[in-house]
Image (cartoon, rainbow, N blue to C red; front, side):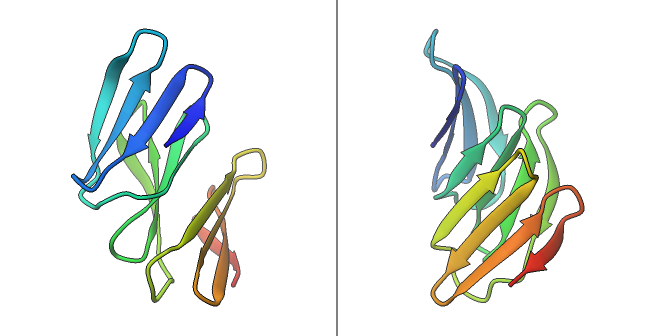
Length: 110
């Protein structure tokens, strides 16, 4: 789960992301992302999450569209960090960390 202001995004093994208004306790959106989700990071507009294809996914929660699928890991992702101010995503698994530029969907460092 990831909180930004009064909006929370949760991911699930049922292959959805849910966008919640925590003040009113209501689900605002359900995004069918077609992969299970275990790590979620949210900046108020974009949500970054892992998936079963060893990929990092970037979606716009307002338009409900996939912006990027960042591939390159050869194992399941164990950790995820999103730095929206710098448009960077850090993803890691055993023995590997990758740094992604979210705007260009390019791998910066590995």
